[in-house]
Image 1: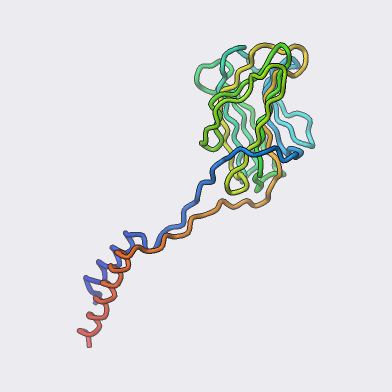
Image 2 (image 1 turned 120 degrees about the vertical axis):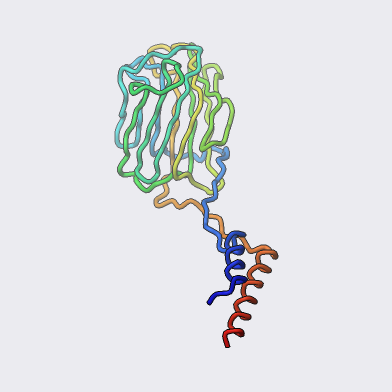
Length: 237
C-alpha cells in the first residue's frame, strides 16, 4: 500500500516542475552587416510596369510571378506578410493592394520550393530601391514578432538591411510590414522591394531550454515523500 505522504510529495514535486517538459527557446532577430552572399530565394514587390506586382525568384527560375495584381495606391501604405515554412519549403507572399485590412485571393502568391524542404536560412535581407521619380519605404517591419521600425524613402538610392537571429539561423520565418511606393518610377522595375533569404542550412533545429534545476523547496518536498516511503516500508515489516 502506498503512503499518502509519498503520493502527496510526488504530486507536489511534479507540480513544482522537478520533472520539467522541454520547451523551445525563441531566438531574437537582430540586424547585422551585409555578409556579401548570393541569395537563395527572394520575394519581390514592384510598381508593376512590366505586368506584375509580386514575384518569387531563386537561382534556377527567373520569375514565379502573379500577373495582373491590383494597382498600387501611390503614397499610401499596403500591409504585407511574407511567410516561409522551413519544413516544407513553402513560401507565401500577401499584399493588401486595395487596403481593406485583409488579403483577398488575388492579393496572395504562394509557391513551394521543394528543394528547400528541411532548410532554414542564416540571413534575411531587406532591399529597397527607387529612382529619381519613385521611391520605396517599409514601416512597422517585424521578423518573427520582433519590430524594426522604418526603412527607405531615401531619394534615388538603395536602402539595404540584413538580419539574422541570436541562434544563428531562421527555420520558420514570418515578415510583416507596410510598403509604400511614393510614385511610379517609370518604365523600369523601380521602385521595388526585395526580401531575400540566404545561406541555406539543412535540418535546422530550434534550440531548446533545459529543464530547470529543482528549487530547494521542491527538493524538500521530494525528501518528505521519500521519508514517507521509508516509514511505510518499516510498518509493513
